[in-house]
Image (cartoon, rainbow, N blue to C red; front, side):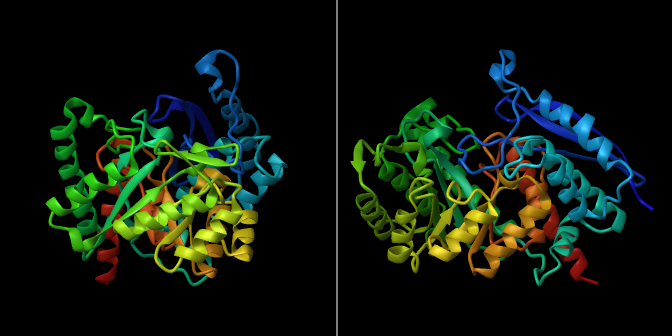
Amino acid sequence: MNSIKSIKAKEILDSRGSPTVAVELETDHGLFSAATPSGVSTGEREAIEIRDGGERYNGKGVLRAVKNINEILSIKLVGKNPEDQKHIDELMLKLDGTPNKSNLGANAILPVSIAVSRAGAKAKGIFLWKYLSELAEKDIYASMPRPSVLLMEGGLHSDSGLGFQEFMVVVDGKSFTQEFKNAVEIYQKLGTLLKLKYGKQGEKIGVEGGFAPPISKTEQALDLIVKAIKDSNLKNKTKIIIDVAASSFYKNKRYYIDGKSFSTEELLDFYSYLIDKYPIAGIEDPFEEDDWQGFGLILKKLGDRIFIIGDDLLTTNIRSIKKAIKENTVNALIIKPNQVGTVTETIEAIQMAKTANWKVFVKHRGGETYDSFISDLAVGLSADYIMAGGPFKPERKAKYDRLLKIEKEINLLNKF
């Protein structure tokens, strides 16, 4: 029987230079690695990362999480069959014993869970994306997501002064490869426009690989993006998706953006104005994470025109997803495995969203690694879209490169 021989964890640095956890798992079929990312803009209901505190790395070290893997999880999981993903994930949850992974840490549990899935796929002799699809056990068939490529950043991702956090584009094409190439062309055109307008300041890059020029007004950013789209001759093929991350500019029951103060209703009117003026297809986190009323209002008013996407509101959390379905507050959600902590729970969240007929967006984090697991996840669970950042930062490019390779793998399998 194939079994886990050893699990070893270590501390590495993510794309922001902050510590995170990497794992190497050995089975009879070889070595399998995984690393967990970390968020910049995080929701209160996310599973807990274990950090060390103290002076080392300003309290952000992860040696406690590493120790939890090397001295607790490894001992309990050695000898287990890596093809039994659900059982292993459930065992880790039992060992943690908390609803939010605050004992062992989601940053300890997730990389082990991902490494186990890679080992399981190898044992079965199939691609990881296909293995993840089989783990779902329901009528979910692997398919390529559409790339939602990051162009410009603001909010907590840069010091540009721009309030909204991310501006992305989705461009029509005959394949993932073509859609990605089209989006990259717009990215390059935007870079040229920003350099002409702002000089060196226009070349500044944000946390996730989008441009972070000295722009403080939402419409200024959108006008430049629309011009880049037009200059690329892709006007009729392109839609814009905005990650507002409204929790970052919410204070004392008011939203402070673009030098103004908005109530929930006033901010909703601003969104209505923007989607009338610009080719916007979706808004992520339009209100702060506890403004359930605001989400309900925007879905009722604009849900038949755009995607109302929940991230901080839902945090890949089954209880929150159930509440959102019951209260009818979104029609799309963000999936981030490290928000919930295991592969099994991530799959469950996607299945629940699909049952509710929501659109599914698999998304990276602000502090990323070279691990491309979310690419296989998006394909295997037939996500509608993937958000993997700007197209050239290496930790973001790793996700796109994997997706381009997966498309070739799918085409190869379809020949037989």
